[in-house]
Structure formats: structure tokens, C-alpha cells
Length: 250
Ligand SMILES: Nc1ncnc2c1ncn2[C@@H]1O[C@H](COP(=O)(O)OP(=O)(O)OP(=O)(O)O)[C@@H](O)[C@H]1O
Ligand SMILES: [Mg+2]
Image 1 (tube, rainbow, N blue to C red):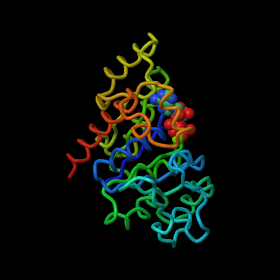
Image 2: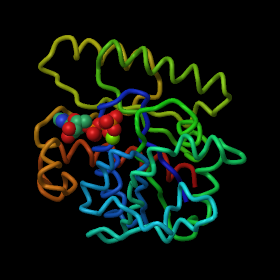
Image 3: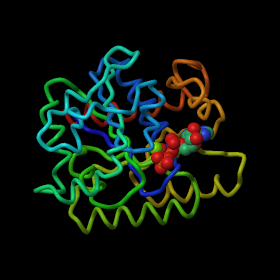
């Protein structure tokens, strides 16, 4: 089982949209896939038409003694399950802070699932606190969406510095360009700067298209309602690169 976290300390960069589409494409490729919605905003849960509320006894992430599999729900798609966000996840930071081995909590909670899934995607809220450290320890790979702007460069440098200082393996870090609008000169320039400056930027990029925003109305992954669109092709190309990375690890 490999764990891939869609992570950024910046909000609104396309983490959830990518997590949903990549998880769907992985499942389509035959990987037994679980998407964990760690964000109390519960957008990923909404996109898969799953109710965010977990039964009291099933709060796998916040309730230390409880088995996580009681919280997992099926989706409309073969090979794809979801651990829905629960409003109690707003307290994940506090829960993890109070727990023993507070930075390892998420990794430990996910461990019993290793026989059931080939791939786990984590959809993270935009944070760099104890939950983020749990994510860094639980994940084999971090996938960071970068909107091509100067500010993204700065935030990504801060993240790299943090990971280095705290001795996380730098080879776990990958980024890709997200919400790219090539009609904008500034974005074209920023894209070049990002590709020159960082050596972990994947080739595939996700264009800025209202078709992706429509996921909120369609409540389906993009390749389901617009399989031949540029947006779907972007996610397919991204999945191909991610797949090559995880297959290379086996
Ligand atoms: N490629 C895209 N083109 C156009 N709109 C997009 C694209 N990707 C995401 N969006 C839209 O932008 C908004 C933010 O995207 P998303 O929720 O995926 O970001 P996020 O990083 O998960 O945000 P948060 O930090 O709040 O969790 C959403 O309304 C989404 O529909
Ligand atoms: Mg999100």
C-alpha cells in the first residue's frame, strides 16, 4: 500500500480537485483505492455524494481506539472507497496533539488498511501544523499543486525548507502546475521560473478550466462527465506520471 498526499500549505490551489480525479483514475486502472478526506470542509466527500457525517462509534481518525474500517464507505465506482470527512475532523489537530506519538498518529491509523488497498490518497486542508506533520509521516509521496505565481514559489520554498529541516526525505516531494492559464503572460513567465528553479515539477499540468469547477454541480470526477476534455486529459497525464512514480517504488 502506498500513500499519496495532495498537500499544500496554501488554500484553493486544486488539492481536492486533483485528489478526487486522481483517486478515480487510479481505481479505474485497477488499483484498490481509498480517498481519505481530512478536511472538515468535506469537499471531496461532497463530490462523491457521500454524507459527511460518520456514526458516533465510527470516528476512526479522532477516536483513538476505534478501527478505521468501520468509517469507510463505498463510492459509485469500482475499486474506490472513501473515508468521509467528518465535522469532528476540525479538531484533528487537537486530537493528534493530545495523542501519544502525536506525529505518527495518522500513519498508525492507516496501517491496518495495508491489506485492503493498493493506494491511499489523502486530501489535506491547507495547514502546516501537527496535522501536516502527520501527513508527512503517513505519506510515501507528497504531491503539491502549484499555481504559477511568484507567491507559490515562495510558499513552496518554505515547504521545502521545512521538510529539509525536519529531515523528511526530499525524494518524497513532487509538484505539478495547477489551474494554469497560459493566456496570462505573468503565468507563462512564472511557469518557466518554477520549472527552472525546482527539479521535482512533473511534466503534466492542469489547465484552468470552468469544466473542472463544474465538478461541484456534476458531483462526479471530470473524466466521468467530460472524458475527452482537455481537463480530463490533464488529469490522465498527471495520473500516468504519478503511477510511474509509485510503480517505480515497488
Ligand atoms: N483546474 C481548475 N480550473 C478551474 N477551476 C478549478 C480548477 N481546479 C480547481 N478549481 C476550482 O477552484 C476551487 C478550489 O479548488 P480545490 O477545492 O480543488 O482547491 P483546494 O486546494 O483543495 O482548496 P482548499 O485549500 O480550500 O482545500 C474550487 O472551486 C474548484 O472547483
Ligand atoms: Mg481542498
